[in-house]
Structures are given as structure tokens and as C-alpha cells.
Image (tube, rainbow, N blue to C red):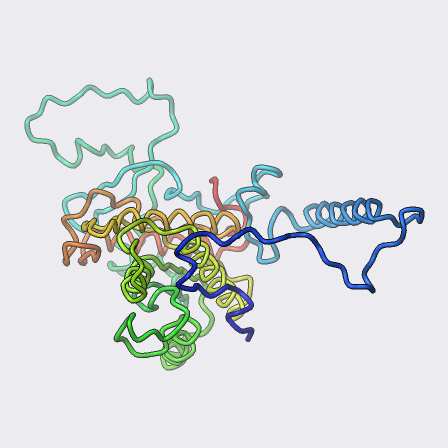
Length: 371
């Protein structure tokens, strides 16, 4: 497997003092690569033009043969804008979690659902405001509100429903920031007290893969990755260690570039392990209750960066955390960790929905960003 250095540039303490000076981007050609004289047919301009035509021809041919996707079959938002959505099998479920909506918490934890707003004209949905002094859950969410909601897969599984037969023998692999220690690239003693190695390359090899082998788990059917809160901690502790004055300020551009390069490396590493056909998702952030040291601001920056990477690489987003904004009374540590309850039932339903889409032939490629 290739070394880390091929995928990212290490972050130096000096990088935080400002952006690097612009480098001279002029090309230096070795003697054997020099172009012919301007009098010859293969002038520099003609070679560039011919190269551009060949690249354009190859791209169009690839799109006509395989559709607008990268080698892994993942469709980027840019491709959708240019070429439209590829053909989708009729039985592929439409993604309710990419639609605007609101949370339904219900009377019990297993009632929790994400309810997309309907597409019908609003004049067809007018209901008189209730004058009742006691508002019931049925009044707030009439039955027709759930038409576009995700099925209650977790509830069905807990009741032993035979309709969940498709989950048997399936695996969802979470490579997340409570298993990893973020995108850290070395065993820094000032960072953490957990067992080494600290970087994801070492932890996956030393801990994750042996544990999966012990449980007789083969290749996963869906992979969900995330890395946010540990990275915030890493940058804060690093700033203290190197006496950098902006430890409670937003991340610098250089820090975000470094983090993005490590996220790219994680995606590449995962695809090396499991191939390019297994769908990968990235879980986006949820708010922290504690905003000391500008935590919320900094997590927002990392989250925006990960969203941009997802769009660039055609990786779908697991947006569970964004649907919980304002629901901070469920943090058991008054900061960031949710206790078991409504939010975990929603997590399970989302996970099972994307697992079903991942194992249905043709569904992952056709449903990517805009359902």
C-alpha cells in the first residue's frame, strides 16, 4: 500500500503564521521533452490543441458508454448539472433525507422520523389553525404528512418483521471519529493518551481489521466515515503545544487544506482496502452545545470542507446531525454526545435506508445528490 506522503503534505508549525508564498508555476521541460521549432508542424500550440481534442473525445466517449460517473460509479453534482441524472430502476427508493423537512419525535423514542415537506401546491394543503389548548402529536402531524417519510425500518427490525429479510448477512462499516483519533498523521504524545498508533492508517490495520476478522465480517456493503470533533481537539492541542496564539480562533486556510488532504487520503485508503464499487458516505456534523473556544464555528468550517469533498468526489452525505439542531437536551455530557433515545432511532432508520439503496442494483449510481 502506498505511503501517506503520496496523498497529503504534512502540516508544519510554521504554516500557521500565514499562507505560503506563491511559487513560480512556470513549467521546466527536460531536454528530451522540448517542443519542435515554431516552423515545424508540431508547434507548442498545435500540440496543446491536439491534446485538448483527444481529452475531450475520451471524456465524451466515456460518458456515452458509461454515463456521467467516475470509475467508482459515483456521480458528482457537477456531472448532474451538465448531463442530468442517469437512468434509475423503478424500484429504487427516493431519498427523503435530502429533502427539506422537519423532525417528528412522537410520544416514544421509536416514533422518531424525518418528515419531508410535500410537493403539492400549498393552497391544496391549507388546514385551519387549531384552537385546542392541548396540542396532540396527531394534531401536529396528520397521517398524510408521513407519505414521503422513510419507512420505520428500526421499529420493524425490533418487532422481528419478515419485511426486513434484506438485512440478513449485510454489513455497514462505520469508520468514525469515536473509533479513530481524527485525521492526525503521527503519534504525538501531547495529543492523546489512547493506544498508539494514532493515525487512521495504523489504527485500521492494528485494531479495526483484526476485530472484523474475529467477528467473521467480510467486505462491507456500505461504508460511512466521518472525522470532525477529534480534529478540532487536535488543532487546539497542537496550538497549545507550539504556543500558537490562534488556538481559539477559526481554522486557518492552511489548516483546512491539510485536513482536506487527510480526508482525501482516508477515502483513497478505504477504496484501496475494499475496492471502488462499495458505496462510501460521509457523516456531516451535529452542533455542540458548548461553544467555548469557538467550537461551533470551527466544526462548521470542517463540515463545509467535508461537504465540498463529497461533492467533488461524488460521495453521498449522511446528514443525520443537521436534522437534530436545537435538540440539545439529549446530550448526556452537556456538550456533544447524544444518549440513547429518539436520535438513535433516527440514526438507525437512515443507516438502514442507505444500506437498502446500496445493495439494490443500480440504485446508488442513479440516486446521488438530487432525488
